[in-house]
Image 1 (cartoon, helix red, strand yellow):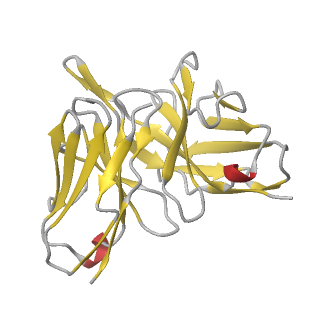
Image 2 (cartoon, chains in turn yellow, brown):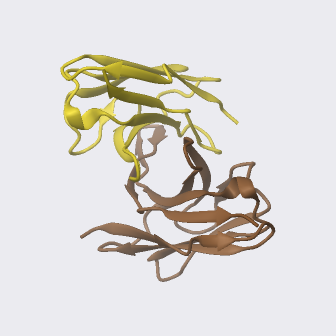
Length: 107
Length: 125
């Protein structure tokens, strides 16, 4: 199975900060990667698919980039509602695999 | 309102069985790959299984292969996960999710766009 790693595992940031999260795959996965946001006690929400396509209704402060084995999720000007845990998911091959998550909390 | 509703969770002893259901409201599931994802307490997300619209293509994570069975109904509104030989490490919130997969040229991509609210399964003696 394809292994996914994320860094950092957690970070503290302030409202208005720019935040970058990295996801790496153990083998090349083209652009077959999504980013999901999860808040405590809630189901995950899709932010980005195909590595860089913003899902409908997601604010434009979120963006994704990368292909092959290295990907990034960037949040420009962090908002209070963005404090959450973020996961990448490779959908290149079954079994699909999530990264371990990055928790973004308030500094 | 478009939503997925998970149900069927509960407490079960190790070695026991449970059957989870996921029912669509406001839409039908016939055009979606369907997935199960779980989250153990305080842990990350784990993809478990998928089934395509025909029901003929299925896959599982190694952690549940041979113990869990995914299925969907012919009425195209429900998804199921039969869980047998349950272990303490299967304790988790289980989510169903639609995959609105699409293709651009030769490449196809996934979008887990609708999720159920989650159903808690506790395996304990």
